[in-house]
Image (cartoon, rainbow, N blue to C red; front, side):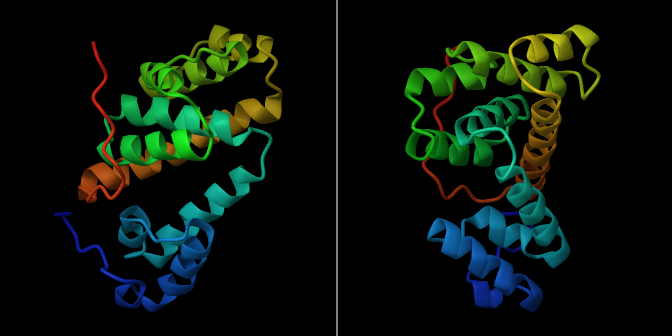
Length: 182
């Protein structure tokens, strides 16, 4: 059970959150617990959805975004986000189990994606204080300045949801992600 109430339905959410939750349901076909718990604050839900929507229109493809989400969730030890992004990576981004495991470990089996995943992992591990060679490595792999900024923004977005879900102990409503082998 979560530490604060998760509205059981959209009707139980604050009135200002309901149209935002309707949009989530239209997009996903359901309203996962994370959205409903964030919806306790219409401002927080609007902010999260706004940044998420803006970044979805960015230069990074969905598969890279999911890879980053997996690396960040693993480093932040967020069970909810690991479950959600393992599901999304497999079913929407069509990443295989070996790639999902690699992403969670902080790398990729794809050379270009590897640079983005490693960079994202370094951002989390160093709380943003990465060395100049980390930025150079991701640039040398072919990422533009815009894409580098987007990688940082995706780390921040995923850290937000990791923290919300860990602090509030959001009940996991996706298939649970297996623990990684050492």
